[in-house]
Image 1 (tube, rainbow over the protein chains, first blue to last red):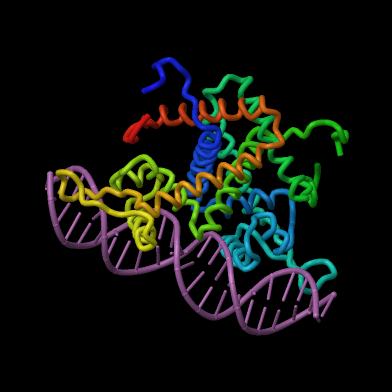
Image 2 (image 1 turned 90 degrees about the vertical axis):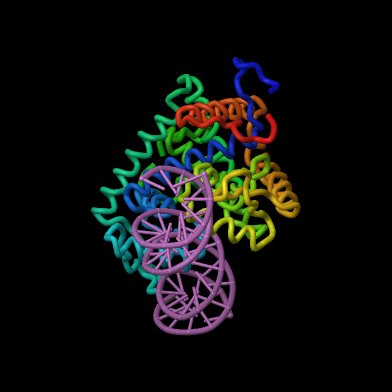
Length: 158
Length: 158
DNA sequence: TATTGTTATACTCTATAACTATA
DNA sequence: TATAGTTATAGAGTATAACAATA
């Protein structure tokens, strides 16, 4: 033991970030499982809240192969959460959108994740919570810019 | 567009945390995939760096069913990364430990994750990186305490 | 009886490769 | 030819339930 009982714990920067991530993933996974959904399905529903992407577009957003997305959408569709719509002018393209039921489920998931993540950071001083949000936002935007992705692209509204 | 070009983006606190998490998971997943490992296998190897837990203990640390861990350890064992050792006094218990090869792989994974996560936060001012580490550490320790888990329990050394 | 671990079974998730249909 | 999407196939990951062995 090199630390005294009162010294604040100090994790390795990488460990801290990784373990924070696993904690958040566990929270999200628990919420998803409560609705018999996987984290991937939850992510997809989250994405579809304000977009109606094509399959390929969706695969890029989820960082998955298009064939994986076929199965993902198949299963969500079978459960009445999403629908495929034959698109605009392109006879090949298919767009994916939430059904009314999917929208209700997505809203509920958002609520529950918000509640549980709020609980996760409830022990932090308000100032630290703000810092965390600010810093996380910056990392996310920096990364998106680095990857040439516009986070607001294709959204229904800003 | 409600924001001016120069206003810093401001995500919803929950979105920011969730998206940061997905970004980190993507980084970890990429490193793992490079070695043909899943994130779960990577996590397990990380845990085993300084512990030799029983199967049940391991399942708790990974938040998985014990039967899931059986398969996980089976596959890692088949690849020569871990070994099962019949334990101390208890004839039922099995302990899991890294092989020499597993240890080398774990070290390499740690290195690569460190490099890539460093890149992820490289755009942040040093002060923000420190804040992120401090806040993440606190969340992780708070959560562990909340769940009655001692993060240093069972470790070879502090 | 309770605990530790494995086995049997059934899904979901994922990728690769080959395919269909449209552009 | 190129692009959007699906199908076929195979393996990993996961849970539930039933089981074996030890405590």
